[in-house]
Amino acid sequence: MKELAKELSLSVGTVSKALSDSHEISDDTKKKVAETASRLNYTLNPYASSLRNKKSKTIAVVLPEVADNFFSLAINGIQSVAEKKGYHVLIYLSHEKFSNEKSILSECCSGRVDGVLISVSSETTDAQHILKLQQQNVPIVFFDREFEGLHIAKVITNDFECGYASATHLISNGCKNPVFLSISSSLGICNHRASGFKAALKDKKIADPEKAIIECRGTKEEVDWQIKNLLTGKTKPDGIVASVERLAMSVYLVSQQINISIPAELKVIVFSTLETAPILNPPLTTITQPAFEIGKTAAELLFKGIEKKKYNLFDEIITLPSVLIERTSSQPCQFKKK
Image 1 (cartoon, rainbow, N blue to C red):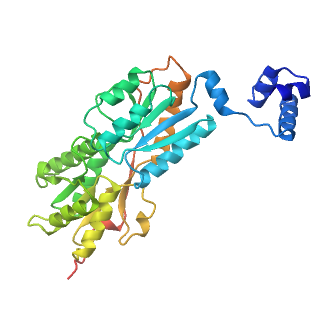
Image 2 (image 1 turned 30 degrees about the vertical axis):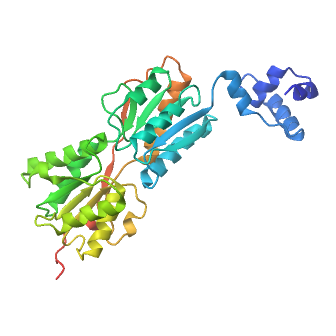
């Protein structure tokens, strides 16, 4: 930078501001500095700048998994904001393990990152690791999955209403014994969706709301086995709402294996942003979350906490509604399979 300043007969400060596109510097000067920098093969060193400003210029994104299409889209939303801010994004996976999540947040302390976006694991029942990070004044924002009861900003969707809508949809299409497949009894999004589902059953006086919530946990093979037992049992359901994408895929595969026809014998809805839902056989009815917008909004909120020292992130709650998209898998069928 000193060489550039000497070459152009400008101060180092002017060159620095020109390279940072400061409004204080004229367009002509910015152009001259940029052309000279290009000719001399000069590039800004963001790491040196970060050290000087005591900022890592990095945010952490902690996810339970990436197999789910929702999180892939959310990452794109987060990245779209981080790039404009000149920040790097570190992606951490907890693989739905509390121990992994705890270890990851421990690494985020001591200035390693300037802020954290987190969607908690299905095993997370204690929040001390999150509170410890907050006590170190590291801005935190929950997105999609939160740990309830904490004064921490969050960007979520209308899970209770969507759970209610999913049950109502199945009942209106003829289901007498619908069930809700959950992955955790402690995860807020699952509980809210399940609560909405049960409320609809109670209002419509259909089945036993408490017995309609089925928890499916474990490896893929274990989940497939649980679903197979459910679909071959004495009180097998005629409708399923899957709380996460991977459960619906298991329902489709198991139904094919045991020769159950969707939607003639079993109607299926899933909370999912799966792009291939319209081309599955049959096309899958989804409750589609605004994944990109959730990630983008969460990142924008986080940067307010990073850039504005007095900005209160504690009780900021933003709810972005999801949409039920009806396809063949949940529609009435005039003829049942012989």
